[in-house]
Image (tube, rainbow, N blue to C red):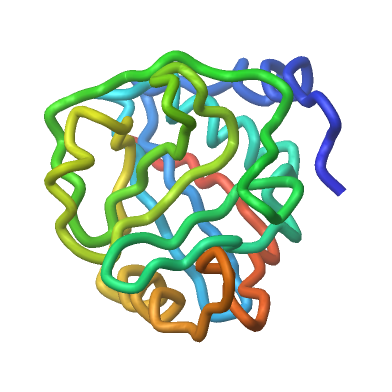
Length: 179
């Protein structure tokens, strides 16, 4: 069960992140395969720190991809499993010039640009109208990871684009690699 307000735990988990010395990868082990994501701290350091901190405290473990829109995105990171929840805080937008391409990791939000918290999405195709409107901050690290994203993107969905059968993030882990 996710922490009700994990801000302090996340800040402690973020304390040792050093983008000047290390490259970070986020591994999402899902019920449909593993998704390895490279972070883009050069364009969105706050978003990278946020998702890595959440992953380090186990926030994403057991959460589902609650929204799958064929040809568009897969979305996860809601503690309620409905698209209505977050970690109890929001972060400021870091819009940048990185395009939303297949496998791009970006932050979900409400109509308020500074309302992102824990919900993220992964693009299934090129989605240019999201560029400079949502914070892109990572990318699938390899073809196998992109294939898992695309496989999740093909699951059968029901009302509200929710998968008929849950696709779960079993575990999220952070790898620290030398630059």
